[in-house]
Image (cartoon, rainbow, N blue to C red):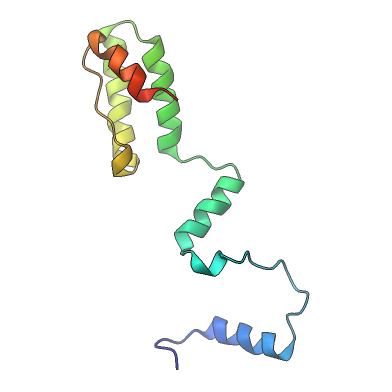
Length: 112
């Protein structure tokens, strides 16, 4: 007995045993049931060309760093880095740019 009621799963198993599902729809990939829902979503989103906002910001920040020439540019970059760090996975977070003298280090950090 299952610890929970899986009505849809039970219906699918019954239909499969009767042979009602033969030739219906695409088969799942073999590892589909081994992954969790989020991993399956990520794969489908990637295949559909979806790009998370933090990755868009990452590319935008990289371009801005290479074009930066003033302290104002640095301030704009740091605002975007702050937004990026709030959205990206923790291991991907990066420090802000410390003045014009910090641009060389930032170029290495944000290079693709």
